[in-house]
Amino acid sequence: MKEQAKRNKQETIHKDEPRLTGVDGIFFKTDNPDNIKEWYQKNLGLQTDRWGTNFEWYQGFDATKKGFTQWSPSAKTPNILRLPPRTL
Image 1: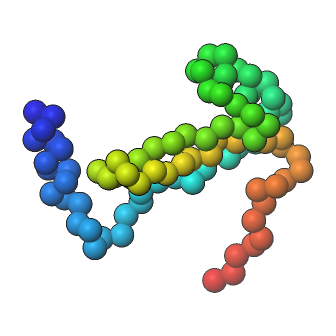
Image 2 (image 1 turned 120 degrees about the vertical axis):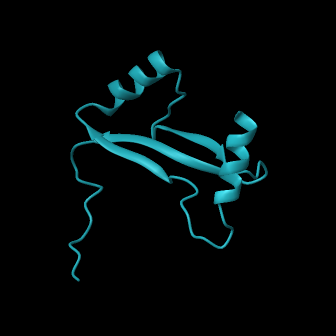
C-alpha cells in the first residue's frame, strides 16, 4: 500500500511544474521569547539558541539536496517583521 502511494505521488509530480519545495522559516512574536524557547526545549526537545533553532530536511525524493527551516520566536516589540505597504 505504501509503495503504491509513493508511486502515485511520484507520477503526479512533473519536473517542469513549479512547486513549493520547502519553508524558509517560521517566525512569530510572543511576549517572552526566552520562555517559549525554554518550553519547546523542555517539552519537545528542540535545541534552541538566541535565534531559535532550525530544522534540516531533504528536498522531495532527492536525499542529496538538503533544505533548512528556521524557527524563531521574537519579542512583540520592536516590530521587526513589518513590511512596507504594497501598491498594486
